[in-house]
Amino acid sequence: MNRGIHAVMPSLKQRCRRVFLAVVLLSMSTAHAALFGDDEARQAILELRTKVDALQVKSAEDLRKANEENAQLNAQLRRSILELASQIEVSRGELARIRGQDEQFARDLTDVQLRQKDLMQSIEDRLKKFEPSKVRVDGLEFVADPAEVRDFDAALATLRKGDFAQAQSLFTDFNRRYPSSGYNPSALFWLGNAQYAQRNYKDAVSNFRALMSASPTHLRAPEALLSIANCQIELKETKGARTTLGELLKTYPQSEAATVGKERLAKLK
Image (cartoon, rainbow, N blue to C red; front, side, top):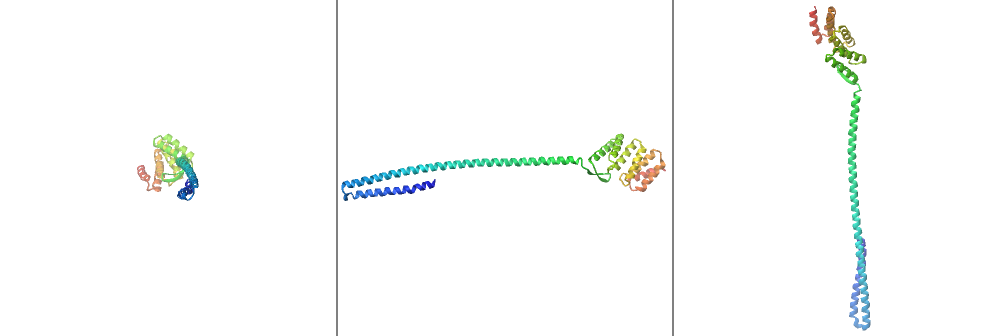
């Protein structure tokens, strides 16, 4: 726009100068009219006036055109500014939309990650139900399948409730299903106790001796020997009971079972 205005301005200045010179010449011609004849002077003045009028008209037309061009340039500039402002507003809206999409994407990604974490945790928890784990029972630490842990705990809980017949069945089934389990010595001990409670002394002795044979250093071994002696006493096998109690005192002298066995041995004499 400024370039258009600047292009028109030199032309206007030149025409103004011409008008000014024409006026000056007209004045000079009037001053020198006396030097020429009246007709010639009048003719010269009329010609100068005609030229001045033409120049004024031309200058006015040029000024009008310059104003029109200036108005057009201003209008074009306003349209350009409005279009630019509109484009800026559209760009801002698009940027806000993109930012909103990014924020939504970030939230969605966080939700997916949380769901994935929960899913992985759920899978791990389910796998743990089937994976062997370390357990510690009666001083022994070993690896057991979840099914072993479940079945042993169920049998022991049944025994503690006083349902000796059902406990005997559960421990018998346990030893049959898991013959190599680390629970076996403890299962034999509690099976013997369930049988003792039902006065099935001979079977109880068999299971206590199976424990002694399989694991003589087991934590329950001294109690198993004492239980064998108790079964023999119930079976009126006094001699056998004395022998078993003597073995208890000799093999496990520092055990609590040995203290009880010593008292019972004294009563048998």
